[in-house]
Image (cartoon, rainbow, N blue to C red):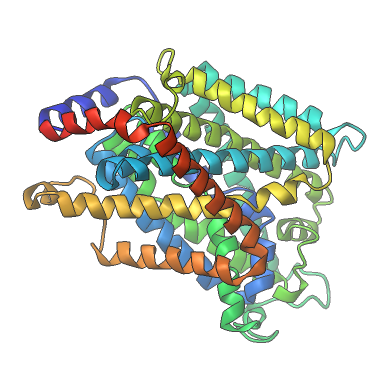
Length: 469
């Protein structure tokens, strides 16, 4: 693509009304706060003990370098489709095709899991109402938000994130008050000694810490939505860098600090996962309606995730369609909204209604196990695409980048090595074999479809035109 074409593309994106800076910032903020923190953190603590704090720091560094890679490409060349377009441009047609479809697969799987979670959470207040009814209501809400306008999506996500952030800050403040003023029940084991008094900082050894890697990485799944949302921003060159640069502080505040407070209040071996650690803190403070409060928060977190996942998958699939890597019908938009793609995904998600009607007890566990492979695969492709883009970039152009990755290239290679190591963990641990098998099977299926449907020939003319320019 020529410099003039790139400048024209950037100008078009900047001038189009879209998401404001506060929307992008809160999407970035909310993408890392979900059920993985409110409930999933208990499983990671059980596996690693207090050393889970190190795992969150390591995983947070990986996420940061991945997002900086995506941010560099998004600011330099903001396009609909985001990382699916970048991987095609720098790694080839197959890579772009697989990355886009793997991301859509990841988003739909997570949507199905969160749809089921909402149905389960609503059972707290309405135990006699069938789960599928809540799934249907949720689809109507998020479907309407995604089909209305980009701005409506941003406002809804802004409100959802505000609730989640407030809950986490209240938990941290409440936990600090319990520690500072000695509000714990008599006989409760609290304090810094909880970090080493029950088997040490590594109670299950280094193996236990490694075993928690996948759970922790999955908790950060969806953060790459920043790149997709950034292409809808009014000013991506301002919004994307500011949103991405908040990642270290978000990780420290909402994960490491929150879990540190939990571990200081409760010995790690007493966090069984039967109830959220957040509930225990509020109950200690005498908030008798702590369970109901957390229920509101986790429902909000699940709604937020579904809302953002539909948005991200819709934009990526539309970008694929425009690159001749998806059915052309998915490329149709109305006032900038990928209506056809969103409608198609909503139809697919109706499967969630059926599954909740047929298997209300088991569907969440079955679905949630399938997303980890897709999440870290997409991250790996983003990192590889950015590395490839730098290698093809003239020195002067690299020096002129407005949002270059830090610690180049060492940070990128660290993140890539960590992700490859995580795939090895999935091979090592039997509980992740199902996710690994399904992920590899999906990869093989989409590769076959890529060649059977003639996608290489379909994109060849466009690639030749890009090379000529």
